[in-house]
Image (cartoon, rainbow, N blue to C red; front, side, top):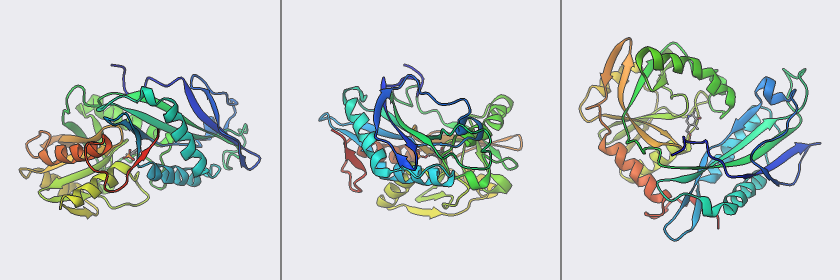
Length: 332
Ligand SMILES: *Cc1c(COP(=O)(O)O)cnc(C)c1O
């Protein structure tokens, strides 16, 4: 099986913004794009993206999950980066149209079609370090993906980092390329130094998120996760899991968690921790590494509540449970 995100559908939907206007959507080859070497994005990182999925149901229907949430976040990211304002209706049509074109290629569960809308500043002006790009390109790329947990859901090892930051705090809620480049150095160091899978960024002891996923703690009937603020990415999966947990009668606590509280709670039997994101849904966390000490979370294994929440979400996405919240949009 090819690595996640390395296989692409041959065509994509593309639109450009010029002269204060979005041009009509085109279908183009997904092999290459043409931009000027002086394009704003290549020098000043005017770039943002989205990640959402389309699922195949038993009856052959293809459904996109929570597209409205992703469109809103895409609009917000573009706005916060001073990219041209996106036309949500056009982008929605681009997504539905290109997914419909490749409906036959949408893998069956546990696979799916990963959808990657991308928006970049294209103005050829290396003098605009402190000015926005007046032109841009927006495309919707498709990548069929398999079972993220093909090798089994092995609980992750997270390094708790209280001194570093994933990205600049005012950039946290923007799904923007530079943020991942910013977090990469510390993550590679954590991998080689302490064999961590990811860093859980906890600036000044405030538990935030990892490089590309939100963090949740489960203690009995309670789910605890950081309340939304501009310092971290507002995950659609996070929101979905909290909604489903509330449906199941769990108590949702959206508030700050300190590293001290996290380590105290993690030592209790039955406590679970997990990362949430579109790619992996919910991934169990088995170990925290903090000041050279290892702290097992609960019994260090994937917890039953984590697995139950993941299954509950997958059942809706895969058409095996009722879509009570109207999260699915039919494509074909
Ligand atoms: C995409 C992303 C998430 C998860 O968001 P979802 O909408 O659930 O996929 C969390 N944190 C970061 C930094 C991300 O880039």
